[in-house]
Image (cartoon, rainbow, N blue to C red; front, side):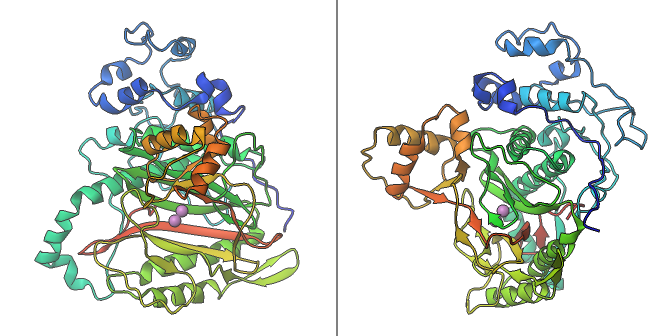
Length: 497
Ligand code: CO
Ligand code: CO
């Protein structure tokens, strides 16, 4: 059974790291391109005439020249194996003025399809397939979410009624309160739709043998593109977690890390998208080998339990107890050894506020003595961690994730590099989490001592990898939801989980 080979699934061919194929150390889009991407809401003239190479306005982008030749219309071929279904004749207009997306497109041999359905089940354990349906997007994705939904009618999340809540849905006062949250809800739905499309893409490229850094780069570039990254107004909410096996959270490769994902690994993909600081924090576990099925199911079901138990006035202690009960009803047999699945008792879900991923309240995943309750209008991420180890994590290993302290006070900085680095962090990330790889790419190479000085001064908090015991395996599932006055909206829900 354990010799079951990974199925040969056609996927894109990641040949080289994104940064080596691009100028300027693969720095993020320059300002002009960012603005182009974001603001040309009616700038479709260029896009609709994609094959016309001799356009003015491209003179400032020399690297585009190389791509001219290839910049033909999307090749619509049913040849690719994943397009067993007929390829619809009309593809959405790509918003392809982004060199990274051009590169990703080439890795798919320039074959763009716009089939919403996607087979996950024959590659990944537990993750469900994406269903067929109307879809104005290509694969690989090229169309920004704003352009798919110009009327801002982004898909609504899964609506769950509160346990006592039949009346809330129709209550006039609650409906009015709902309206007051409209801007936040729309921003969150947009971020959630972006998250779904990015993770669907991620599920297309994550395969045994691939380097995690290449996978993370592509997830991040796709995230930036689809959400139309624009300074602190829209973008990535935190580094792409891809913690392996006994590492539960907060691992992403630093520059030079060549770790690959393999058939026997258990990998937690945890990434975030934000619009105006409204964050979607949502994670799934990748496993190819069926021996981990019960471990993954335990985390998935426990997260569902937590979401179901959540509500206005719900007690944290009761939610934690329910999560633990679901989680610990599972056993998993790995290489002849049977493990009772444990909920990691020092990890938890959390409330979310604008630009603040951990807004102060925690949702335990074991029973505890908390007297806290959830309240109307709050936003939460429920995440649960299933472990075959101790069920207790510690900080260990090289740090990649950092985040400015939300309440940091200005202090004099002695280290010569610290001040400049702090300016960069303030402008680029503010209080959103970031990773060392991103600093390197925006030209802040040799940042280590400056970063250390900022940590020592208490301005930046390091978030090192969180690990259970060596040899153990940890699975995680996470969703973001909003306790609307009328109902609970599970914003990040998708067909996959
Ligand atoms: Co979270
Ligand atoms: Co997360």
